[in-house]
Image 1 (cartoon, rainbow, N blue to C red):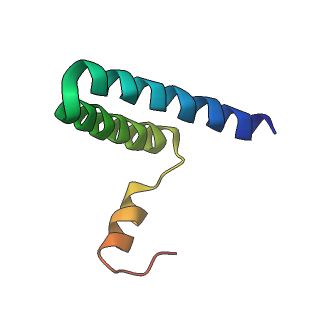
Image 2: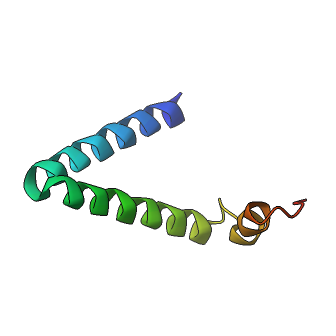
Length: 66
């Protein structure tokens, strides 16, 4: 249950941060913050081992994974 709650809290915080970015920097600032946040999330998942980048690239190329 705490994992789901942490996801809700993180999602809410991300939404608030994006809202502030949109208000402060306009639409393109909002897009930049969202893209950089997604890149940071992917890098963090790869560093912690929750995402296998080689398998993800192979799957994107249509190669069999596993």
